[in-house]
Image (cartoon, rainbow, N blue to C red):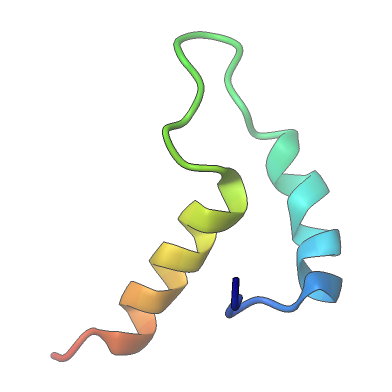
Length: 48
């Protein structure tokens, strides 16, 4: 799978994201990296 965020950058962002998880409720439907990739893709490709 091709990623917008390089593995080296995700190695820094991933652990930061892990600390932000809530202990309440179900887990996310998408893995964290995939959600971040989708948000980044939408931000890059959105037309104003």
